Image (cartoon, rainbow, N blue to C red):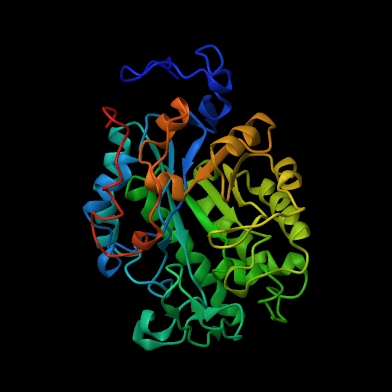
Length: 385
């Protein structure tokens, strides 16, 4: 990083910040073939502004604002097929139109020197017939329905249709949807893909024993429940190269009623199994994040998974500046994902460098359709835009 006299501001000497010893979050890191200039990652954040499931031109400014030279950005969850959707106006990457619409967004990130990964996603049973082709039932590992849930805005009640349990012989075609989505992401210019295996969506619905009640080779034992996830990893890595593939996992979370009776064993098994495929990174959500936006005291830690996985380890979940610095300093993670703070502070790496005050995020505008408000109108530091 450059020195700390930025935009005429005086050097900030708290936390022994000197040009000789930048804070751990702002040290360079080599992630496979990607040279990162710092360790602050834009988390994948659903923003629900991709009208008709097509990425929009306003996303060019949104992602570009949050790009720094050598910074890693993970795009919002992006559907792999027409059965993958469960929310209004989330983007997809299964059609030619969607691929073309992503290109200028990716180009804008690259123009500022950023590294951009696309998170590929299937919601499984977290959906209803209104989001499904021909009004069919959502697909899942199970036919167990999900109870209605208050949406993240705290107001709307999301209604879920009873899912249809996939037959054993249908599963390869879903794996193939992830493979094709990965190919499309690379065609759109993304540097790689992150497989969304977290937060109670389809892959998590296979892994977690509170959801998966199958009696075939995809159910029962831990190995069987992880089979689908690892088949997706293998297919995607074979398609675009393991050096372009990450995965996000949340073994400890119980989002969307997807909890597990032994989350530590699940997380460890996945971390160890991923090593066989040589993928670039494993991105795990901290155990303290039981549900969206709810941080709790927790005896568990990601350290065993961090030690077990051979590649880059990214941690996420309620991080602020100080505990992010600490996690990197203590080697508990290589990179730290920031979601709400990055959403509200497009120049978050600069603010962390200067230990500058942060804009407060406004939860009420996280998911509105407006192409500007709560999206691209959060201010930069004075004179730094």
